[in-house]
Length: 149
Image 1: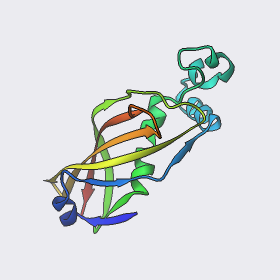
Image 2: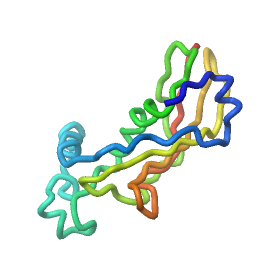
Image 3: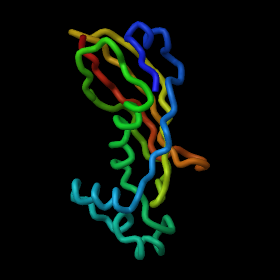
């Protein structure tokens, strides 16, 4: 994991800033997410039925994959010299390919932009979360974080 200051981030706009460690997606995790979100669609939580479905087995919720971004990013790089950071939103989110269950994902992060805001700095981080060996990412977009000094 790397630690970068706001000044160092400004110098790295347009560059890849890290690749996460692999993260395992289990049926138990998918079921817990389904319980937390009340999204119990059979393609996620019924492995037997899902085997005869369009993906040949259960798949993770797209929003489960998305919800891993703070965890994967936080173990890839952190911003030093700030009082706090908050998730501000997302830009251009897509789910091009499913995550099979069980499966392993990894995220690649690119620094898309850094700009001043009242009391801090806004950082735009492009991401792709994918299953190793898959032709398309499972989630792709841009996360917006506000860091306050």
